[in-house]
Length: 380
Image (cartoon, rainbow, N blue to C red):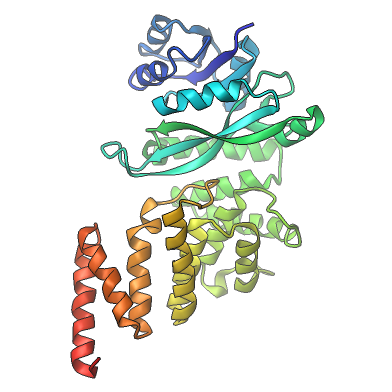
């Protein structure tokens, strides 16, 4: 039995596939590639790299295709890789170490979502379960955004094994492509089918609503309102029913008070955000924006300081993605503005001076000019 099977499902990926396959050469004991109907050179490229290629007709179900790959894998461990990703070279040793851990059922790996393919240093990171033992009970469910049923936590508990975070990192090049209308429409269709078959899944309700909103479909607001009602059933719990609840809270906190679903108020939303996701960057950001808009500059300052500390320590929640700028220059810029509103001009000046060397140079210069004007007018 081989040790590591790298598994993939592909379709028309001749552009991305060589990079993905090259990144795991020498690490994978076997490459298992399931093709769902390519019309380009994808199959030939995979075969030339030594992959075992199987054909699986597309049935509007990502989990079905993934499970077809798992069923054909012979390794003790599975490493899941998408065609528009690559394993980073510095991850080879951590991957080797993970494969030797007898205590582990699975490992989370860090996925870097590039925001600009021309700038490899601009990305956000998300934890994703990509390395796991090849066990028959670890099988995916969900037409879109597959997950394990039973969950990996249940299986780990039953087998007396653990799930760990790792230093393994993959780079994802296709993040921006995921927001193209064609992909969004496909996702919406699959999410609708998923909820029709298995209703009231909070994770999928949130994803469906968000996808519809990105398509400018007014049904998105209705779906998210229904998801908010489902969330109310979990308000007394210590942990969130799904990490995707953070995205729902972010959406709700951006609504005017009068548009919030019945039974939900801002105090409840902020309380859940603090209890469930205290290190979630998008939630701290939107809460700071809300406080600033209400004229509560002290509260906004406090939230933005937490945000900048998370940015310095890189100790933020990596279960949801976000625009990396709100953890860096934008957070510092808004903090400086909050300080100006509270007449804390010296610290504000220091922040804006640092920002003169950033992408927020224009705004920093304007704020420094405003500070000089205030000091000339009122002294100090």
